Amino acid sequence: MSTLLDDDGARGEAGSATYRIAVLRGLLRALGRTLLWPLRRFFDPRFAGLEQVVAAKHEDLATRIDQLNQRLELVSANVEHFTDQMDAFRSLLAATIDTTNESSIVIGRTLSELLNAADETREAIEQAGGKLGAVPVNTKTGGRAAGRREA
Image (tube, rainbow, N blue to C red; front, side):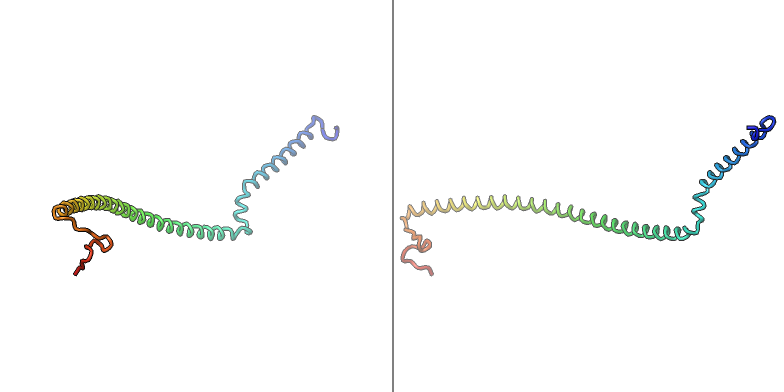
């Protein structure tokens, strides 16, 4: 121990201080390298074409997004057009259903009136036939009396 220290141990303290300064310099150098690493990579010639590749990819992506936006606008316009057509079709269908219902009602009433008129006519013929004497009707000749010809 006598070789490391002088009279009052001054040489040992100086060596310790030099060691601490060297360690501190090493830490500062490592910290500086860590902080400067992104800048060194940015200016690194191995990454020189990176900006061009990123720009090309960005341009391609922007073009694709524009194309998708155009398609989306077209689809949106088609949806609006078909929605308008569906609304028109629905109103036309509702009007057709209403008209069909009204027509069915009118046809039903007309048939009922015709049946009533036919019944009244049949009853009137039966009453008139009873007063005049019954004329036999042949069902095989389609309602003509037997032995008569139609002109």
